[in-house]
Length: 133
Image (cartoon, rainbow, N blue to C red):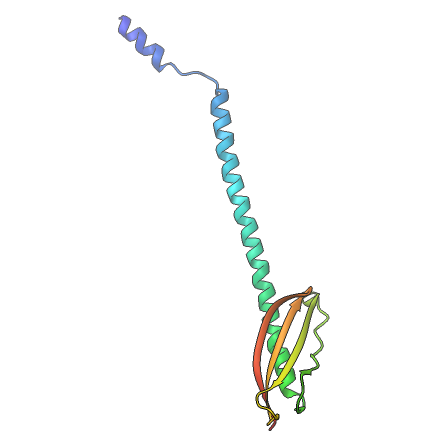
């Protein structure tokens, strides 16, 4: 019988939760929360960068078409940029179009370089050619 009494002592359950169990559970929950929130911040930043790059690429293509459709100016070093839409998605964007004759003297072919900036920081650079037809 003394063996049965000893077994009952070891198998008897306590009614409460110890402080150590609570601390461990909170530490695990905290680590999971920090990991989740840092992942959310990374995804948010990546989405912002992708949106900014897509907008800049669209603007660059529009500016290139604008420059190609303007009249050809021999020995030009730049062309005026098209107006950027006044929509909130295009705030702080600016464009510049540089031109460089392919041969000297200018034989009717120029290399165009469109630069799109946002808040003074270069986002995208697009190169193309303009021909006097």
